[in-house]
Length: 225
Image (cartoon, rainbow, N blue to C red):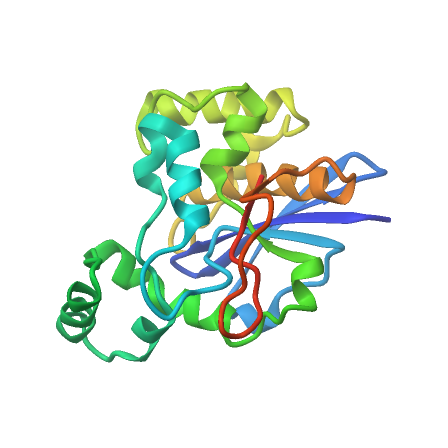
């Protein structure tokens, strides 16, 4: 049984949606630490994999361009040296001197980026790949979504797209979701990412860029959808 999984960071750690491809069913779970990642044939995770030592990543710029008005959801200027700083002020000063600032929102992502960066290897990128939920939803709709995910309009659009693509129980999942550990938009993103993972398993996934560069650890700097 092939398993395609979408993973998104959440308050309680990580939320995973698993699609059992041949059976056409799905479930979700929350796990605390990245090193406890459950087994799947393909994992699409909304977290940077492959980080430059300086500057910015071309895949982020391409993703922003493709998403248009939703492009601001892609962070720019995430670099591996930022993982070493203990305070936001220290990290922000270094980032600014390097040519790209660091937002507070991006700073809060760094612990989870560090978790992934410590475990993913060039070999494991064969089945653990960076993806982005806004690109995943773009693939479902055929164009970037109009409304942000935390608005009522944005949530409705995302839920409708997911229902049309095999997630008929998504409302029930949200009703039983423990919002102390994850929020509805985290779950919806993970669902969309699982569909990206399924496309990758079937050889239909797309990536930015076509020929990704490698970082200092040999990781491909790419975003799939």
